Image (cartoon, rainbow, N blue to C red; front, top):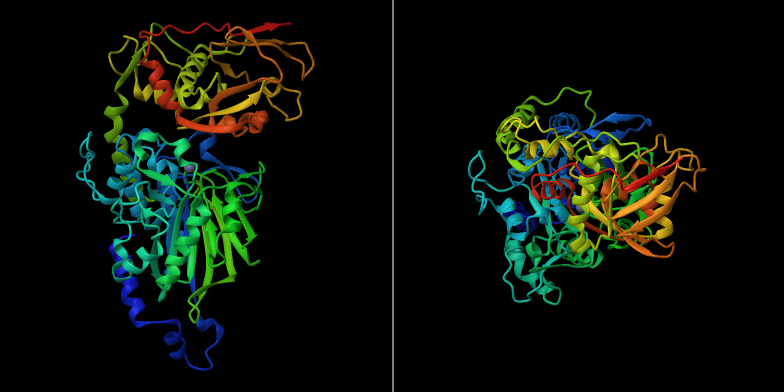
Length: 594
Ligand SMILES: [Zn+2]
């Protein structure tokens, strides 16, 4: 939190209490007069999508079951302005930055943070991606200053986020580390430090308190404790990410200690949903997010979540058996979660029965906000030279045109890069790339830099791999891998509409029969020339779209030991810079028989 919020907390705490407030009310005050309204507007997993996200990342199922185009900063701004009233606090559940498109990534995501400030965001939980460039860089984003290597952005010296980043379960490993995370607590800092003495040294402010209608509202930040396994270790080597529930309960005690009864958890962890459901449905399959939502202290009134990029509104039971909201709003700025509630002025606490939530799809049928449109255009113009940076060379066109086997040269090249990028860390043995995710071809002549010399620019690479998908690795058995490959073909139980041949890394070969019935088309799978057995465990790399069961590849969902690694674009750029100039890989990894 900033000093602003807690200073105000300290002052107000000295002059008011629930009892004082009650005594000032007339004896016959109506119930309405004893409560004040509060509206929360929440975003999660924005991932720097200042421009409207494209492809599947830019589509969302709305409340009527229709698939609509959604997201984009200027549209978010229009929707936020329409939804915000004088009782509104805007909050977020992490991954606002990291794994972002070039327009934001090229400037270490300062444009995305500035956009959040322009939206009026007040508090955000850190997500795992806030640590993508390390803890020191996150602190720079929070506190200001120019980037230590790349210097200031074209907008000048970075002033720091105006909103508060919070993360109660992020602690320093060293128990003697000096922390400034509690500085904003002012006079109450000593008491809080005592409370934390056998807990740990916070690396980030655990809570932020915002005032609305004379009542302090406490926000507790949490980030998935799996962060160390999905973030580059070097940047977080001094930190530990501890159990979210335990940390939330400690943070809740801190809030109690400073007199805050209305308590909201913003957590960057969530659950999967049943496909095709309304964003307002509770179709979340109980998992890591549900554990947190049901187990944190009953003092906590609601749990707004993120990380899994799903939309859901659930009512769960807290440990005392009382209903508690558990929500998430998709990703990439496609959904704003609105939570309306009343706060009881006597108890200063949230009236749980009054909580109403609604997931609004950020449609693009509204007029985009003028100021934000200009803001985005400015950054788009600035990034143009970055887009023109050379990242590799090719000998001739490398296209996404499918060969008879279904492979494309570019798809195979991408798969090879994905395997190379996930071997270390993810222990990947093979990689599979969805053909629909190869969005454009690389052409020898098409480069804007040195026309006709085979140079591939970053912008061209980004056009091929624009989704900022994460590379992931899961363990499948040989039998599950065969099922996955059968799911490439139409006629199976998951209604694959078209045959979609996954692009395999060079070391994975197999045969499929065009005439064999569905379920027995695939045979002769080999990894590095060695036949695959049904019982064998195989580490399979793919982007998070596929691993989540995208394109009806449901067998990926049976994968275990999920590991998340770099962005797919980063894996691709790395591959483009290797063994230059690159010739198109052969499309002979799959053998087709009639
Ligand atoms: Zn995340």
